[in-house]
Image (cartoon, rainbow, N blue to C red; front, side):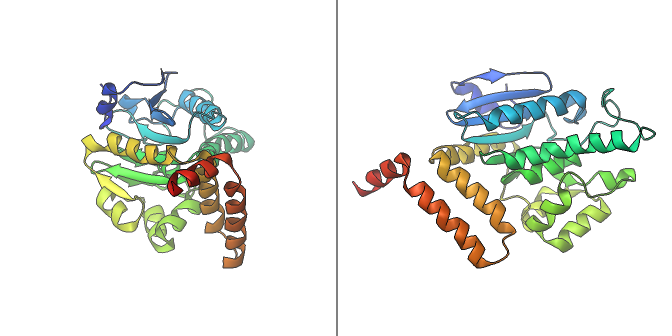
Length: 276
């Protein structure tokens, strides 16, 4: 039985399922892959093994032409509680390690959020419970964020005496909720409820826990049913034009995307279907 509303998937014919250790990779329907962080006894905190497996999984999905949309969620009652400060593994440097070693480690953690953002496929974060620190960073790097009423969000680093800005958080969060709200959350480290996250625009939808998995698959399925190039060009345009220097530069990218996608066989087939 799958957790957090994903039990419905047992009734589906899965294209495939892999359990590499700290992750589960499911295929609930054609074109959709689900990455489930799978250390539920630690609220899916990221240790060295999970970091490595997640990086490899994202690398593999990026070149998998059969996957058109990705869902990121957590097993059990948590999404991701950040880095596992109690049992992280031998490869994570201690505070007295050389600065260069600690910088390299921080870069490998930041690369996870960057890899999610850089996936060609749109990513739906289905936040089922506590989403803290590095978990929040992974959520922010996703394209669409939905959550259950049991979800909560927090910036954990500042509570540990570290900077509250990490793994792209100071880039993504102000662009999603605005600078004042981002400063509130990042500087106080307070816990943000699902209701507040919805009100501030961090998530686009809040559902009951037993509906989260089903709804995530519905949204990912809508994306996966589009022509892959059109969805991927739309994702990239949203990312690039969020930082566009002017309307003119945004229009330039949009115009080129339309010219490129218009000439594809998939677009021609869909135009023929609509005109018939």
